[in-house]
Image (cartoon, rainbow, N blue to C red):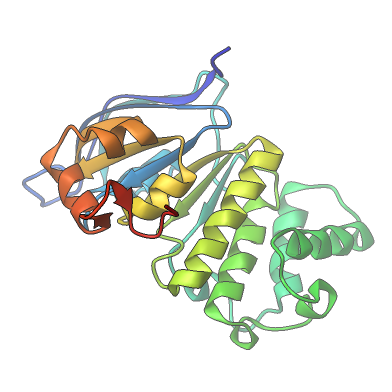
Length: 260
């Protein structure tokens, strides 16, 4: 049985003041509950703009066109939608401990006592496989590596138990090994919780290993969309071919990094 849609974009567009060309135009896209969708495209394609618009994080001066339908009721960033930004350092306050970050989120969205909130914060850090979660609660962001800070950012994003997690270029600043670890973590977390995922990336190889469906954007338009296997095997747009060319092993029909 097909899962109910979490949201539906119908002719969705977005304009910024003073720009001749819209940032997004005519986007038709659905996301089912529990589904993992990759938004891919080159820099400037509109993938991050679309992700932020879905989360309600577009700049106030922007003008939306068309609509976003929420069949199950409106969803709010922070409570119903967790957002992981590209630079975890930019989303963490260097003056606050990791515990303080998590407690702030838990207190804002729950009715937990301090003792229960601390236990929940430690459990969240354990869930994202951060070493020694108890000690990490007392530490500051600068004491962790980039990959560890991204794990902390993911813990913050899932703290309120969202129905949708959006990871906006969350692996682009990490080395290849850590990228694979973060992708595996996102797959495990969303699968265990039945959470939907939007994974924003320019790397079609990463998208192929994580997403159920891939949506390709170019110049603010959706140019290709379908099951991940179909998009890779029979691309429908020149932009999809260009993305594949950067990661395809030309000696065989496999993405670089795939096992034989």
